[in-house]
Image 1 (cartoon, chains in turn purple, brown):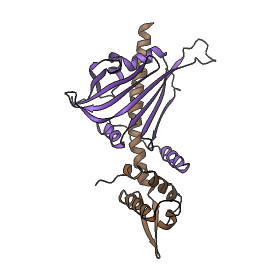
Image 2 (cartoon, chains in turn yellow, red):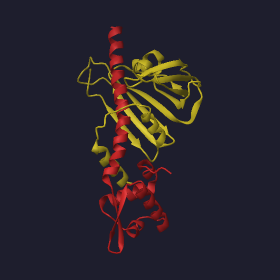
Image 3 (spheres, chains in turn yellow, brown):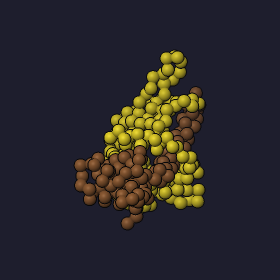
Image 4 (cartoon, chains in turn purple, green):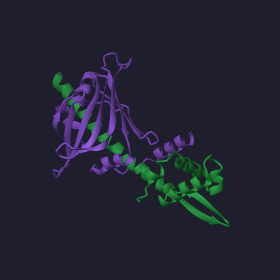
Length: 175
Length: 106
């Protein structure tokens, strides 16, 4: 597995947007399937030890995915994703909202925009397959909603990266 | 009303104030000189920043100086890092899934 794949995560608080970019060592159609097919999505969407459980998923404009993040104790956190736009193997968008188990959404939600692009095979490796870059933009009406995503129980590490603080201060000072 | 660091940085004027006083402690008047808004408006922002514990006031002679509490800024970083971690974990899982599917196809 290649380990020099791009990964970046940035937050722009003034526009309330989160940007996530990641490159995958697989071709475009496979990566697209991994994001748009329920059986693959459920294998990786929930950070372990949580599990992703999709009750239904209609991947079409106007269609919805209703799924839960299930904790190791069996606690379920439901969400609804409503697809608002789909351009096969290029882009899709949905509106994400937390929900109760009866499919009632808690509005407002957040807008998610996924872009897929094939990166050319590296010239130094003519037999190598291309990689695929996925760029995700998440717009949240309030930062508190993002905070809630974390409160949902994901316990990330507490490694502090002071670089972010520097970047933040630099970005602010350029305004 | 709950005051936290995210509220402190939610406003562009407050972010600009943070940047200004990150370099040196300043009096409210000196801070106001950098903005086109009224002094009352700057005082209001300073009050919110103080309530969020992001700035601290210090009396020096007849003047009050405001300075940035850098430690408090780290809370943002800590919080964002958790969010970043979720994505990192998620994508590492996807790498494994992709690699498994590719092997099955061969």
